[in-house]
Image 1 (spheres, rainbow, N blue to C red):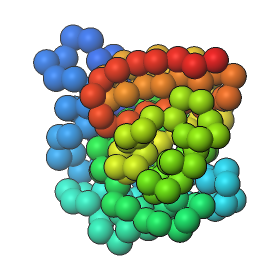
Image 2 (cartoon, rainbow, N blue to C red):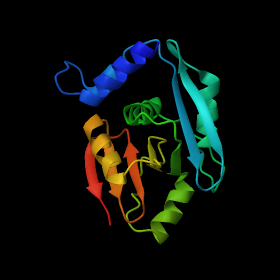
Image 3 (tube, rainbow, N blue to C red):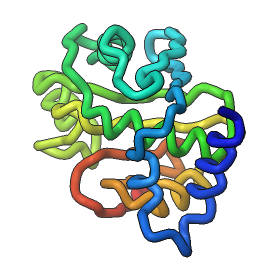
Image 4 (cartoon, one colour):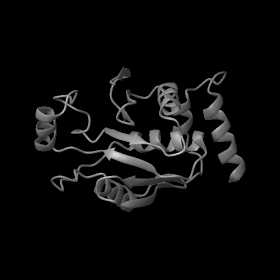
Length: 181
């Protein structure tokens, strides 16, 4: 088990020279459990969820993650794109950290998104947060600029870099990059 995990980490870290992308490597049915540690900065909640065990998604843990990543303003819950969990897992694995991601924003209801658009610059009208395909994070112990480089390297969706605000946006939408502040 540890040898497989070590192989996966090295493969993801090296990236170049393989016939598959780092994300495709993650998609192989390796008998490795995938566990995420998250901390919600708004609710103070912590979670450790093994959403993939042996060779399948763990439905109960996916439900737990969906609840954890709910719109904290309204309580609304939406089913997240599991590719986002795999993207977070890949970052965690490459960084070789057991520190939790700090979650600043995850699912947003249309009501919350509309309110944020009125009061905050740069909130997209059709945000991937409303589709449960986006998350705003930081990772203690990792420079934000390194997190940006790693997220871009994984090449799996949108990467927004907000250095003044101290977070990264990642999503599973089209591949694109931007920076604010």
